[in-house]
Amino acid sequence: MMFGSYVLFIVAQTAENSDTSSYLDTLWKGGPVGYIIMALSIGALALIVMHFVQIRRKKLLPDEQLTVLESYLAGGQVQEALEYCVDPMNDSFLTRILAGGLLRYQRSAFGPFELKNALEEAGEDQAARLYRSTDALGVIGTIAPLLGLLGTVLGMVGAFETIGQTSTSGHEMLATNISEALVTTLLGLILAIPCVALFSYFRNRIDGLSSETAGEIERLVLHLEEARSD
Image 1 (cartoon, one colour):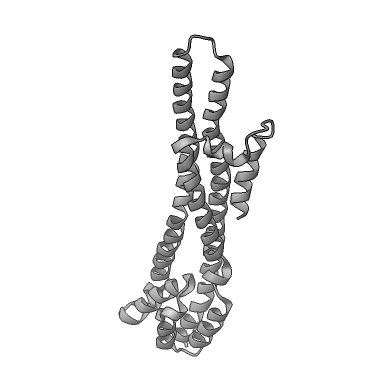
Image 2 (tube, rainbow, N blue to C red):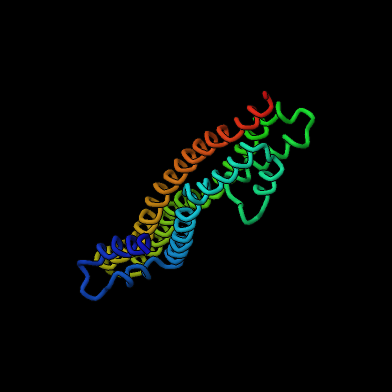
């Protein structure tokens, strides 16, 4: 809702000098391209809410899972730890990575030596999936200004055609038509700026949480290495 309110607030500023037009009237002046941008803003809002919910430590690296897995691995209960990780009820960024490593550890004759490589591969795969989930927000942030420019160019072409068909100079009509055409550029920029900023923010959060998860997993598998050396 904050994102939608932000869009409406900025657009409203363009209509302050108009007695007959509200900010909603200004939005509708964007035409078909403006409608597309508004639809994209709704999609962007849904993606932003989804990412704020999913890309957080409590969701990706739950403390209760760390406690349970550490108790299993410290006691040498590798099979129980693997079953815990593959249980759909315990699905998380942490368990998906650790499950790949523990599976290789059990099934391969060289499992103990391949454990770290398996964990690194699983970690890279899961991090890549998180990155891909944010791509849609980046795409919206990239194409929104281009759609705004497209709408403005189409509007200005129509404005000059209208002037060409009139017998008078029509300066006032031209100014009105151009101001309406610029609405799509305004909408595109209003949508693109927060999308690009939040895209970078979520990417940085993924980097930070991936590094933290890697550190926690390394601490967990130390129990396996200690048990092997004993």
